Length: 233
Image (tube, rainbow, N blue to C red):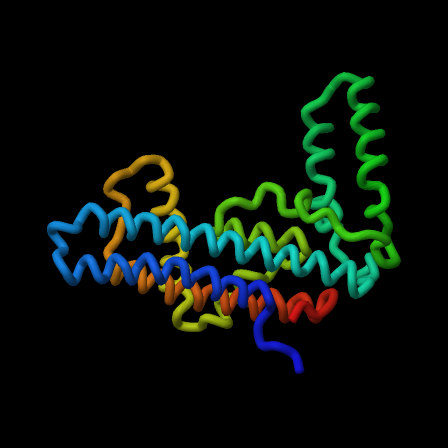
């Protein structure tokens, strides 16, 4: 029987329990004395936001890693895969070439590319070895809607936003705005903004919306993968 969600989403559910523990602690302190415990409550809420943003980011990376694994294990024919996929594998080499003008150094970098990545570059047939996860995932570090959409485009998935909108229906704008709020608040906290925080109730709302967002993302990406390449559920 095919699971409704991917293993990446199951891992997310387990990790979000860490955020719930922090919120539960903040709730308990709030109930005792919100004024006397304000600093600790604030600290717990800020930590919750940072952790939640990290878990959303980790979920998307896990989803990408799962897809890469299935593409190899299920011997997907490279003829079915978008050229952008191959570019994502070797992007580091191409970026190095863009930054180099000396002919000798260009030649060295081309030889390095051929030595490290040539096995992946073919227009047909399955990959002969596991795909380089670190290379493919490199550069994705913020789970904003636009960044996630750009990340999925590495697989050739261009309709993520429209599919997500269809899955979330009337909740699309409120949920996508909340994801944007989580990411921006997390960034403000990371840059030392002492006013960036939220209440325990705020964090509970963030968790609820984040899970709805990731469920819809899971369904959208997994459905597209099944049609485009192979099942990942």
